[in-house]
Amino acid sequence: MAKCTPNTGNKQLDEAITQWLQYDKNPQTLEIVKKLVADNNIEELNVCFGSRMDFGTAGLRSAMGAGTSRMNDLTVIQTTQGFCRYLEQHFIDLKERGVVIGFDARAHPASGGNSKRFATLAATVFVSHGVPVFLFSSITPTPFVPYTVTYKKLCAGIMVTASHNPKQDNGYKVYWSNGSQIIPPHDAGIASAIEENLEPWPQSWDEMLIKDSPLLKDPYAEINRHYFQDIQQHCFHRNINKTSKEKFVHTSVHGVGHEFVKSAFKAFDLAQPYAVPEQKDPDPEFSTVKYPNPEEGKGVLTLSFALAAKEGASIILANDPDADRLAVAEKQESGEWKVFSGNELGALLGWWMFTCWKEQNKDPAAVKDVYMLASTVSSKILRAIAVKEGFHFEETLTGFKWMGNRSHQLLEQGKKVLFAFEEAIGYMCSPVVLDKDGVSAAAITAEMACYLATKDTSLSQQLKHIYEEYGYHITKASYFICYDSETIKKLFNRLRNFEGEGTYPKTCGSFTVSGVRDLTTGYDSNESDKKAILPTSKSSEMLTFTFSNGGVATMRTSGTEPKIKYYAEICAPPGNSDPEQLKTELKSLVDAIVEDFFEPEKNNLTPQPQ
Image (cartoon, helix red, strand yellow):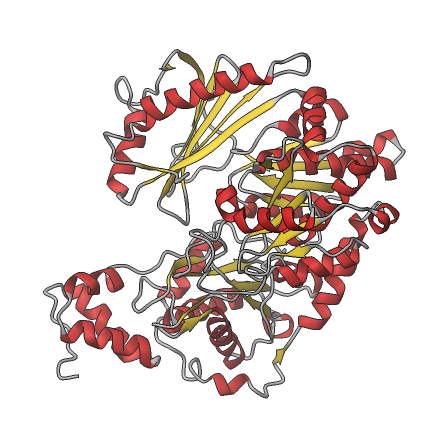
């Protein structure tokens, strides 16, 4: 191209582009940038180079493409160099123990980026620096990476995936030596190390380096074998599984999950699930769904419903594309399908894990060492079960990174962590993976359904029994889409200065606010010193309101998507509660929160698509 010297009128931007042109060796992304420079397309150059992807506790997640704000060969190399340097500072035995790298099936032909290539380049960086790498030779579910970290006692793990994000996105998820996602201060430390290692090291681009390197090993066969052996400790009714007539449909929503869920079913002696043929093989275009996210509900499950009708199956199991999450639907007597919310499935799995544990442990004193965890925006149903049954329940900040790290601490203290969940359909049914795991959860849910069938009970009926015994917990969660960070800032600032500086709302519609917890500022009106117990973070917005009618509502920003989410729940004590009345009351509360706190029309917010 004729002109390849940027001249945008913005010195910082020009420097970022010039550095890119010097460092990038991917012909496709290089050509994209050269054309933007030649056309002096300042607007697009600003999108690509106006910022660098933030490295946070969720690692990286962004669209694939050219530039510092995108997932591509160069940003993956730069990130891995920083991560490698950071690990060197923390592990003197890094070059003995090494790291594991896994990847999903995402691809972006326009920029030449795909998960396997990014994983290969990350492996190249580590090997070029003398660090052993266990690089999976084929696609794997995300849970296999944290499993490998703990199973092989490695220093760290990397999973290249964007989970359930739209098809153009990819990500770089990082696990620490304890098998959990990183938490502060590691995120800031790694981010700083990335900035100090932007220039590619001499061999970072040389993929041939790892072809015959003794430092590169493929853990695929070994991990497949041991993972499915390890999760069998949670198979309690093998004889029922073998003879059950229950039929299951499984969809991996064009992701990696199907073959692994089949293996989990085999490990539990369950009859193989029917695969949704259009969705069982990985497809980076996600061609049959608008959003590859089973959390969105019935829209993603249309093909599953059709297959279930054809095969006479009553239960659908759906993984997201990297198979760390699980959605479940059950056919009702009316012929309608019920898609369980994340909180409802959390209640069922929590009840099941405790019931199975109790069967195995007849000593009443053993319960004092049993723990379950849930994130603070998830249903409080586990707390209600814990109060009655005598085990411990703990609440953590949002995200499995917090539950994984806390579970690791408890296990180190000799405690038994039975279960952890978050309402965003994430479940940890086995501590062999200190993260959410949709593969083991699928098999465990299927076994629970087979067991209940022998009692002439469905999952839906059992959920009702749980609520009748421990108290109804009615929840509603949704979100608004907002791309303008200033609007989000104003919305939350208004709630923090509602009737003058530092004052929060006292009412919401006809509902009285009885308490406020602000995990952005660290304020909690219910604590004697007004300081929140859970860790706080100024980098994200999170407000929780409790109401005098027993309602709780949390508003928070998403760390990976342009969303403001809300979670509302009404908890009733055990007894003769009227669930329909509670649902009506919750709807009124949510309507008031949306109108008074979100002000969607004034703030130009787009509601969750139905």
